[in-house]
Image (tube, rainbow over all chains, first blue to last red; front, side):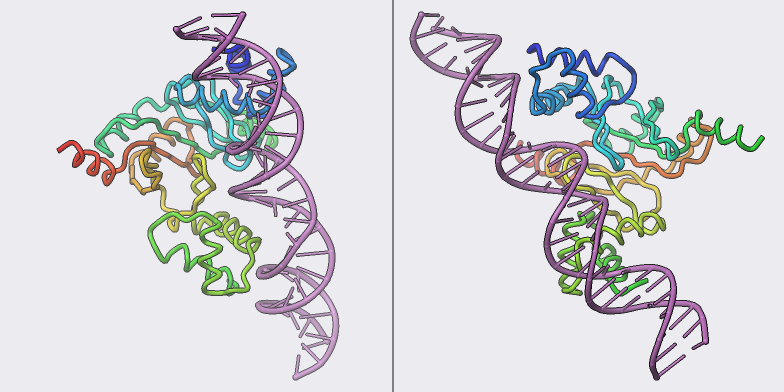
Length: 126
Length: 126
DNA sequence: AATATTTTTTAGACTAATTCTAAAAAAGTT
DNA sequence: AACTTTTTTAGAATTAGTCTAAAAAATATT
């Protein structure tokens, strides 16, 4: 654990939203101005390999990073583009049954309107 | 349906493997040498919007395209990198129950060793 | 069928995200 | 402290994909 790796992990854990590498780079720069972009990418990859964080591969934009490695899905809002966690406890069992082995990891991305946007759309109809 | 769009769709449907845009471009070029990269990207996007094909966002490499829009998951082999279809019929219901609406679409990527690689590994131990 | 309008294609420039490189710095070893 | 290994840094390089403006093709209009 180097100073820069700690800072990167702190940034990722500092709020619940799923940042991009670029965002993490700038946030880390505030805490450790000398940090370089390559270090951010290197450490993000290392943290993913060590199963400390998780990468959410971008639907269109850049990849995002999730502070938790605990398996869960992501809802990508088709209105606002936001990424939200959704837990789907039984999915791992279904996958394991289907492929006949415990998967190394899995990623579920659901595209739908998030509840905030749905609420907003509903209010517009009143 | 232009000539180039037809060619692109033919290429995608010509075999069961999940090609990248670049691969589709070269395969389409064999059938229609004047075709340009931009046309391939434009039409792939159009075909995805029309729900004729599906995009599998790259785990590391570039995005790949699936000739079927019928919902199903993908197994990404951690040994050989191959992408294989897996059908998980109940997943859509689970998602719908969980988020309280039918999702626009979803994508499930499972990382595990494919059966061919597992077989190969097993043979090595004999 | 000729003309006008709209859509699509093309080649290549451009951009964004990520990776690579080689030297410097830091960390760990004997 | 001297040596070895690992990590960091800055910036160049690469890759995947997008944008642009002109040409071509398709479609609609007379």
